[in-house]
Amino acid sequence: MHIDTIPAPDLAWQQEALCAQTGGDFFFPEPGSSVREAKRICGLCPIRSACLEYALEHDERFGVWGGLSEKERLALRRTCS
Ligand code: SF4
Image (cartoon, rainbow, N blue to C red; front, side):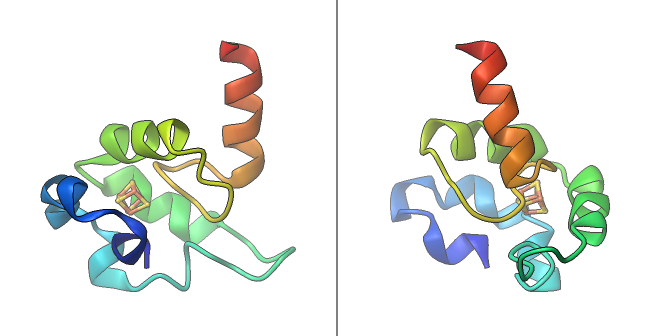
């Protein structure tokens, strides 16, 4: 679950994380598995923007963060740099 990987000072915004309620399995699927369900949950999450910002700032390489997959975050980083 993502909340386990966030350092303590950043935990406050995580209290509203929907993935904390659903479990982390959707968010760290096996290679080649669908991320559709994780993205659907992220689409309903009130802290999606903060989550994506955190993932980009901390160069999170694995899993779905803020509604974006690993490949999508990498592509976003490339277009923003
Ligand atoms: S945006 Fe997605 S990964 Fe981020 S906290 Fe919300 S449900 Fe979890």
